[in-house]
Length: 365
Image (cartoon, rainbow, N blue to C red; front, side, top):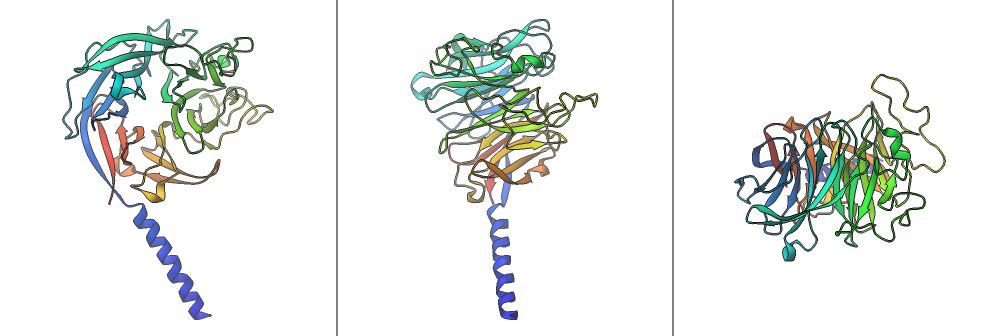
């Protein structure tokens, strides 16, 4: 019996040691001094493309040197949560130099999330074309969404916030507020969108019932699209997004109004989807990636979610469509994490959210 117990304890110590070794990492600052960076995109030649909330795009070279601001970028409404949001490269970027930028457009009385399409040549945008503007326009500089994601079929997803004061629009399928929207790269609505004929909803609406969605990622092995959204006071959510599905806001929520009053007394209702993860109190989720790389084998298949409130990243372990565990990481940075991305070669990258923001690479130790 004692021998069996010793063997069991030895095996458990090996498992524990393996887990500790598997998740050892070091943090390396690639570049710093950015004014509230919002996202990082990886260029085919190894450089990095960063968007800043104040309306700048900059390229960071592999050696960490930072280029001058890219010229001929569109004007943006910089106030509150408004500014530049996401930037993604076209799947055929190496042939066409095309990128897509989401940002706040307009002024305090009338503004919306807009997407432009342009070509990046010699540190300037050329052939800048407005691809899409969320309708209706709203007042106030909050709840824009603004995350972009290409799907395998070449269509483009855009998250749209509810505009804060217009939360009932999230349940209106004819409004583009509080939605995930899907479009072709020419700005048209795909023929297989849930409301493509316009009879039961807007042709661009892909899912609805969202509040302030600021995370969007995709697992190509299962075709699952994951998104996260800010709740009010509590009720931050991670959802698996299905075309045509209703995610409940504001009819159901785990959060409260900032006054402490109910948004809704219900946390579930027929025909409305439940999150696979919710946080109460709020963590203020920001940025998200489904990790598929081989640099951290123990993390493969996990979701990484920035947590602005706690100045860390949450790693969510998945079993199928279920979150089975949660781990807090990178708190030693002592900074709000705005974006979390996986590079083409399997490293994790973090963007810190401050007036001296950093691009940080996570390396195996």
